Image (tube, one colour):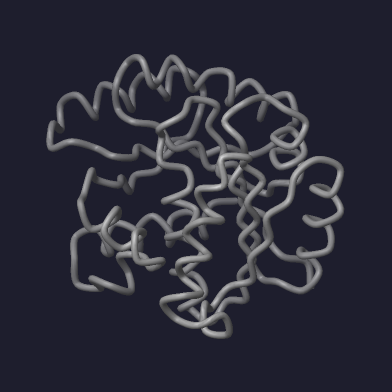
Length: 211
């Protein structure tokens, strides 16, 4: 088995990388996939979420394999985990450090979350440049989208102008995401009938099809 590697990367902070990585990992694990989640972000947000998850569900019922690594161990961990998981999701640091480059280089798909504002779109360029340099496939995801369809459509046009594919599925700025993460869960578990959960299901399906 050689797992598919999806790296969630964005050099601009506040884009919702960790929340998106956690939600995708849990969703796919509930689809009977063996999923590994690797946190290489020194901020450790995903690691804190996973510790809470173990407290909420118990350590043997989290549904996913989790690793928190930095530095020289990053490549070896990614290579090792890929051998026995269907999907490997990497939450990368918000800077162009060595670990970020390793994660982008290892990825079958780089998912770049960005909020739909001009400043956020402009700040996405360094991440796209890194992925291009590493010859990695990229898909941008509009995250924390407010209910302003006209602005969102314009931001999609700007991303297309940068030569990047943009996911048709978008993720709204919804309380369900933060509430579930605070409990070590995800919206697909705590509120499976919510709009938030539906958005994750749609995005996960689209990303899984993208090659």
